[in-house]
Length: 246
Image (cartoon, rainbow, N blue to C red):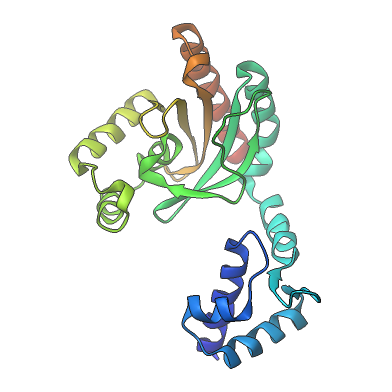
């Protein structure tokens, strides 16, 4: 039974990752499973409402049922409930893209986003993930994790994009985050984009979530840099007060 569940979830995850319908043969080939077994799994997922099959092409795709469940979970997340009005105010003050993220293992998960009127050419979506050590909000949260060094070492060992990082340097960066209360990157992770991240501190001394502000480098001069930092720190402090009351 456990094996069947794992295979079923693998099929569903593959369908979610693909932007369009997928053939049975392609699913079986990618997962290295027999077509007959994949067909049975798909039939069960269709019956449960997680998958649909196109009548004309015979291809399979995920339904919105997972999104529906996810929306119910996200709606009850204390950080998202607390952050919503403050994110709106931060967006009004900065006129830039605002993100709410949480730390999930070695990655950050984007929970919510408010786009700038002139959005970035490169932009993540709610539900997207990124390697925590490679993002400003991720480092803002890692700075308050007791096993941060283990997470950094694991990321460098297992993720191609992180292989050039130096553990000692990243730990020094995290120490600076704790001292300043935020971190920023001016095009060092994504060319042409400034990113700022600050933690929303929980009652246990760890970050419950983080807020980031992202903007094209050409829109950020010294004055705006200071404005963003001030507004971001104020916003995260206000959200932390609210989270502590939930």
